[in-house]
Image (cartoon, rainbow, N blue to C red; front, side, top):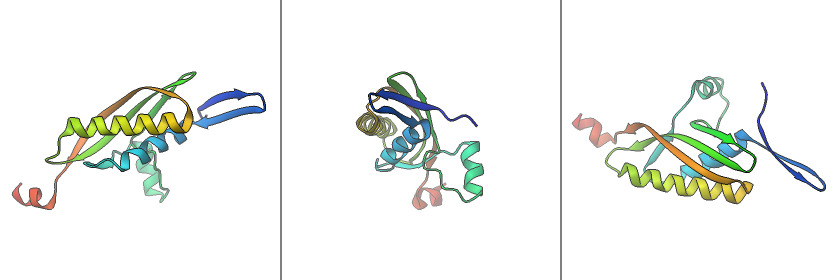
Length: 126
């Protein structure tokens, strides 16, 4: 499997940041946003989950250019919360975290709400 890297040439050598590292930064930033229940799992993440390997970057897709990044997040939100507000908060947190930690310019953080989690109270009514 070929690993993708952001490469920053420096006078003393190169700095390589794997796409998975950027995805993990984005996922961790999302964990603190109120209303986000979980990141959605991809097929690859589902297989690693079955094998007992924890994948913090599941539900995140990263596309990195020379100095910019586009991030797609797949999330489940809590029923009854303002979805647009939750998504804006996720976008802000992810952009800030990735830019501060990598120096990349995050040009887009696309949020895909692919599920809603019901509370026990809502499940009882359904």
